[in-house]
Image (cartoon, helix red, strand yellow):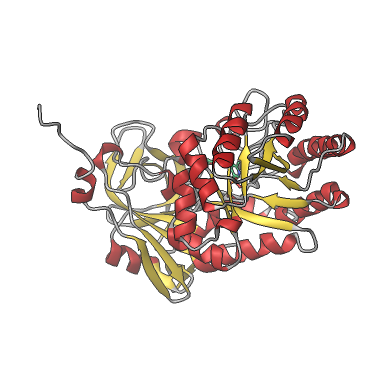
Length: 424
Ligand code: LLP
């Protein structure tokens, strides 16, 4: 459920008219609903009540400082994947004691930053990283709490490019390797070995995909304990999917969060272990839209293109993963509104800059506004300056008020990033 609805014929985010935001802030613009973020966070966190569960919001999904502050105020920790993300989480007021650092390619300086900050946990992915971290931490007279990321060899997720848990993927170590490395890690001076981690993929809509991976993690935990090791934490990663199509949202059956929490409870409850969770998309995905204006129509013999002012640099998911985003006009179409088939495309000089192909939509014309729905996760966070287009602004709505939480980048700021060497 989200808080984007038509009121008086115009699409609103909570109590705020999206056309008013477009007028004031311009387009394209990302608009987030604080009430939706809060609702999802609370639904997620409360589903694990009774377990010793910690929620680390996977901030790669949406790392705007205001979004982080909102979630931090609700009690969320942060799952980070770079020094930059650790810095962002801290800047938003999330304490180091609620920050975990994941990622396959952490460099020494990043590890040092995390150790100095005193973060809760590093999710170690390779043997090399284990030794590097031990060196970095022991040089500082510290022991860094870690969990070891295993690759359960169960691929899952909405698209091949976001599957991480198969042995074909670069993430984590195999279960056999984990048993050997666990013994190595237990004896390293800079390491406080706490447990295991996994994350099998993203946009997973079927609970059955988690079952086998969880089963392997539990079996490994039991084996390690039997060999005398301490396993006090299990970090289960993120990956819960969300409906991107309205029809799916209606028919999506028993609540996925509840079913997932029940699986976690049944699998790991008896182990008396601390559980880490790293949800990203399910917290912020449908809490955001990308608002864009039609700048031209291009009527070709077999197609009508609606050219909008947002491009694949602003929202790359359709180009990168063939992702589907619902399109809602800001003007509510009446029940008898004329519909036609359109291709909705951006201004970028690539054919992949396509948001919708042969989509049946209410008739819209140049100057009209539309919202790409469910763009709160991996939208602004993945945007770029491709084609020298300034990063788009982000707006956070709460009730009947809103704030610009990232202003539109100016051309001056954009150009000021480059340097021309003196010899040119
Ligand atoms: N934990 C780890 C270790 C991850 O790699 C990820 C996502 C998450 C947690 C959060 O997963 P979520 O709950 O959001 O599914 N850009 C893609 C998604 C990439 C996900 C990468 N890892 C997209 O737009 O669909």
